[in-house]
Every structure is written in structure tokens, then in C-alpha cells.
Image (tube, rainbow, N blue to C red; front, side, top):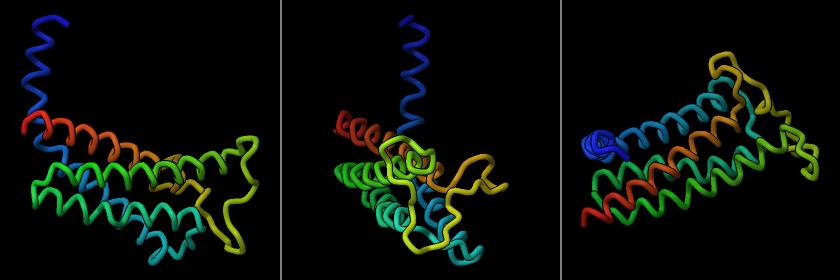
Length: 153
């Protein structure tokens, strides 16, 4: 790396570390409130896989807020574990919808779901795809923050 790039990165790194927790919290809150909007206001029934993703996502919205408030570096590991669980279920769900060979043909059992549908508000993405993106961003960010805070302490 050239000296100029290294200097730019050195200046940028503290800004990323400072604002990233709030961005991760915002992503988690939007994911939680967005899923509630689609199920409670738009009356889109979540399939079982959507419920499992919620089980991992909802605590993160609260946990990230508490982590910011308490300034507990170790809590980023708990956030990462929940985000990893959400990402695993979301990836399976996306693969299921894409028709990847070897994956069961249906994601719902006796529930008329529309989670495979892309909504105009969301662009070309389905709800499980958005869940996967959000969980991967939170996972990556929480690991970053854990290591940055570890290096600082």
C-alpha cells in the first residue's frame, strides 16, 4: 500500500468505528419494523422460515442498542452469533426460492405466503433476500467492531 492510501485509511478507520454501531442498529431496527409492517399492516403471512429469521433478527435490534449504551465490546460477539443464525436461515430460504437442486420444493407448510414476491417498495428483492443482506451487513460490522474495540483495549 502506498503511504497516501495508508494515511487515508488511518484517518477513515476511526470514523467507521465510531459510526458503525449506530448504522448497524438502524439496519436492525429497519429489519424488525419492516417485517412487522409487512405482517401486521400489509397482512403478509410469514412462512416458518421467515419466523426463524425473525427469531434471530429481533433480539439483535435490542442487543445492539444495549451494546451501544453499555459500551461492552464482548456483546458484539453475541450480535455476530445472532446475525450468523439469521444469515444461515435466510441463505437457505433464498436458495429454496431460487430452486437450487437438492433443496425442498416448498418453503411453507399450509400457509399462503408471498415472501417470494418482490415488492415495488423493495425493488427487485424478496423479503428473504433483504434479510440475508441485512444479516450479512450486521455480521460483518459486528465482527469488525469486536476486533476494533479489542485492539483499542
